[in-house]
Length: 246
Image 1 (cartoon, rainbow, N blue to C red):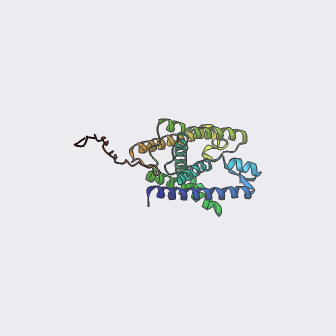
Image 2: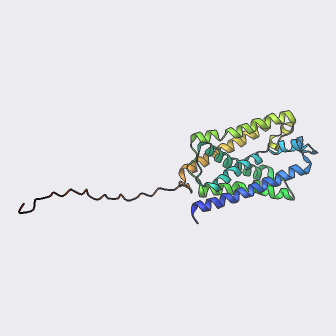
């Protein structure tokens, strides 16, 4: 199988799993009628409130970015562009942080059942490591230069600002380690600082690997050089000589 075909299949499967997980979670949110309110207490909330909270989770946002990046790579494995480089790094970095934080902080107290079990499996266990392994295998590389590295932290900074502002206005926070009402601002800010440090470390490793690993651009075609065609020598005009006897 050609590298471009393998990349298409790999990222196509990733996009399909993430899309299915998002559909399951959106369906649960739309039909449950209840949601975790401030302090993690289950309560009846309007659908609009439930969806605002759903899309405020870092997990959901990182999986949406990953869906866009994976789908684009399934269509064009050698995708390029300044904005796309930032999107790709955000998707990769965000989903790795999602997997690490869930495994080390949240998994012990989170026990989804039913359809939620399958969406959780896709969001937190399959997507992070399938995406990372796909990047290691197929790239495309190199894509993480200094400007891309810097711009990739614009979205996480926005998420942190929005989470704190929305929480201050409503009393709801997406994760226990960010819940100011339960643990206070000093602890919440400390926890977020640790997540940012983790993200910087992961981004630094990705940038280092991006420069050190073999360059891969599965869809890029290397132009073949044609052998120069030798031109025939110019034909000299023949001189006419008078025939004898004239």
